[in-house]
Amino acid sequence: MGSGKTYIGRKLSARLELPFIDTDLEIERRQQTAIADIFSSCGEEAFRQMETSMLGGLMLEDTKAVISLGGGAPVREANRQCIRSMGQVFYLKAPVDILLQRLRREKEGRPMLKGDDLESTIERLLKAREGLYMSLADHVIDVSTEDVDMVCDSIMEAYVG
Image (tube, rainbow, N blue to C red; front, side, top):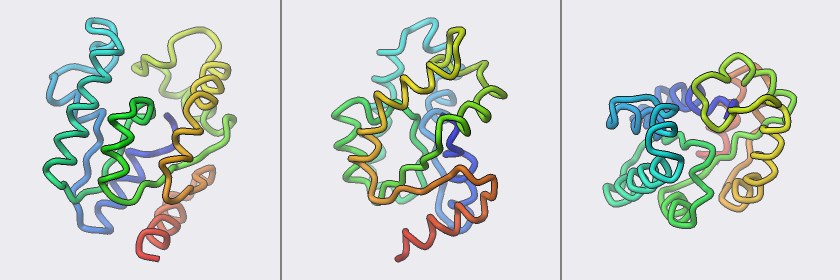
């Protein structure tokens, strides 16, 4: 969360002339409700199952696209298997202070950020997930800069490299 996956993904898809799929936004579209509402009415496990189903469908369709995953997607082994089989994986990495700065503006609507201490929540999630991100990543891209074009250039260089 807060790494810029959706924003950067849209820019990359335009550059590569490929469709853009944000799994969180697609789940919201299909369910016709916000992720926060899915979490509150159905629970995180139901949302994770929707995510797994979507990734499985994308894998079976052999979808060629720029795909932005939710930060919790790699937690499930089934998702990791799908992710590995779908092409190059980029981990958009930012330090906690940058994520905190970005997520303060958008805390509402992010069910994983509920609670009083945003910084400790971000640190806890990152600590729990970063090993998974690193194990999946073909490329690790520093996104601590605000220059999105530079980030996109780095990704493009690694992608075609």
